[in-house]
Image (tube, rainbow, N blue to C red; front, side, top):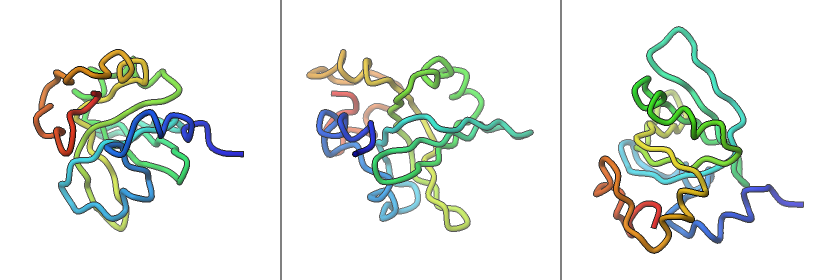
Length: 130
């Protein structure tokens, strides 16, 4: 029996990478990921730490406070999609999140260009949430 997120993978397409594929990304590379929210931590720091789980493993996300407050509602969803940049620290690959979205957001914008802050960075190879 597969992971729940596996059913969405085909719909999202190849722009959204798996936790396994993320391992090969270089520091600072843009990344689009998605998964089930399995952990949210906010230690005494200026960041929130979210862990997504996809069909291949775990994806650690880092959200600065301003980003967290902008997207806190999204994190209540079962599945979350994230756009950000890869950060490689102490042997761990994280995504420093710039934007979050829901699967419903993705479906509503399908066939349309995603209009959001920094959207131009994520037009490789196609626009985010298209």
